[in-house]
Each structure stands twice: as C-alpha cells, then as structure tokens.
Length: 235
Image (tube, rainbow, N blue to C red):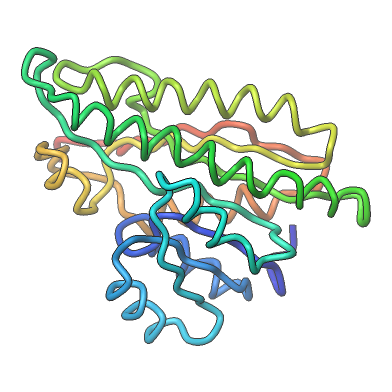
C-alpha cells in the first residue's frame, strides 16, 4: 500500500506505541485520526505533527463512543488496534475490576473498532478492489503464559485468535488483517502494569517501522503475523 494520501485510525494514540505509530504514518503522508481518552496528550501530539493528525476523544470500551468517533469517517484505509493495558498480579490477588478492565480494553475494544470499520472496508473493496488493512497489536504474551499475567495472557492469546479468524474471514473481501506481537518495548506500559520489564527493551520507533513495512506490502501480499523480541533483553 502506498501510504501517501491514505486515512488511518490509531487507537491508544496518546502515548507509547500508539503515538509512535501516528508519527510514522504522518511522516509517510497518511492522515491519522488518533483515538484515546487523554485529550491533553492528543492535543500535544497534534501540536508536534500538524494538521495530518486529528485528535479524537474515545474510550474504545464504550460502544456508543466508538460509533461516534468513527461516524464522520466515510473512508478508512488503515485501522491500528493498539489501545491496551495490563494489570499484573497473582491470580488469587487479581480483582474482578482489573480482570474486566483488561478484557474490555484489549479484546472488546478491538472487536468494537473492527466491527465499525469492516462494512466500510467491504464497500471500498467493491469500489476499488482493495478494502484496507487492520493491524492488531498483541504481544509475545499471546504466545506463552507468564506467572502473574494470567488476565493479560488471556487477552493477548484471545487477540491472536481473533486476528487469525478475522484474517480468514475478511481476506476474500480485500481486507488484510495482521497481528503484531512485540516483546519488551521501552514505553510506560510496564510501569503502569506493575512490571519492571526487560532492562534492555526494544524501541518504539523500531516497532513502528515494522508496522510501516507490513502496511507497505503489495496488495496481494499479506503478512498475517509478526513476532519481535529484543536480541539481548538483559543487556
């Protein structure tokens, strides 16, 4: 896909990988609608990226908010389902609130955003022969289980399954679905989740560059899953 002149939606765009995805897409000539709850951070990113970045307040766990956020977008070439959170703890200390927060954001939010864009992408495919590209940001925690990450593991294993199923469902409609599974990345995620993470993590700009590579693949070339890890996570 030639990213120049395309329209993308990035969820969780206010920080971390989401803001880096937005930066890379804008640099490649894409108009990016950045969705997040923290409007102040979105506005700050807008001041850095200019008019090609459009801040949109949205809680992806709220069905009405998602429908409203997408209501003004008649054409969407790219959806990056990046919004996610982790709250790590032992299973017998995990609260129902923390379990629900992870399920609602990491799985239900992806479902709600995907459900909204698919009819538009199907229509685009009928008109042009190519519908668009959905990129789901999972994790290596969707490949192996980890002590004290049971809820987070469940959401990322689930997201990989959702991605595989929708990829097979939508490819005949000219819609690509790719699942990205990063290991430790230098963002605020670990601190918020309650984990120190690897001392020598990957950098957000490198993950973003990989996503750009996946998006720029030829129309009949689908990269359905990518796994990346730091070479020397302990330094």
